[in-house]
Image 1 (tube, rainbow, N blue to C red):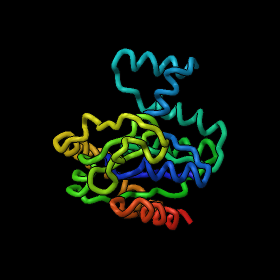
Image 2 (cartoon, rainbow, N blue to C red):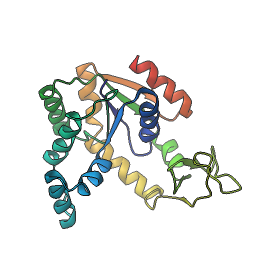
Image 3 (tube, rainbow, N blue to C red):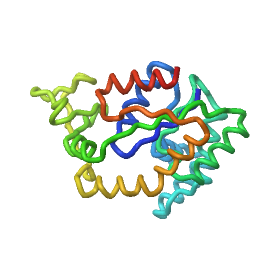
Length: 214
């Protein structure tokens, strides 16, 4: 099964992708992770990525598609989760063409719907464990009083992202709505779109996604 997770920054795509990896043996293809992995790989594609990033240039769609192609030609496990790609209609077309070339299909596009005001309130209150990345929230899941992460069981530093502030989040949301939200109509027209409430309790969201993929 191959799926796309759609939603604005902070909607919880990474958390839900982790569940899918653990329970369905799927492979998460995060653009950022693929670029970092390629940069350090020493492969021909990796050298191209390293050179582009060293110059401070934006990585082209062609490079990202090339990295995805390499993944599709490797271990398929339980299928792929596309997280952070596509972001534009042109990228969606390119990904569709690539999947067709590789004999793969796109089985579902899961949109994690959010209320912007509630999302900003949630994100500005979050912190992550520097060790394992477990997410905490000042209001709903505060950092343990003893400073020991409930996930990795270690006393680690808990960090807030520098751009997890109201002004930055509003700018990131604007970029999402300008560039990425057209994908919702695109995949709806194709009959691929499934929508869930991204601001519900984590386990409720997980159950909704499981139902959408069943």
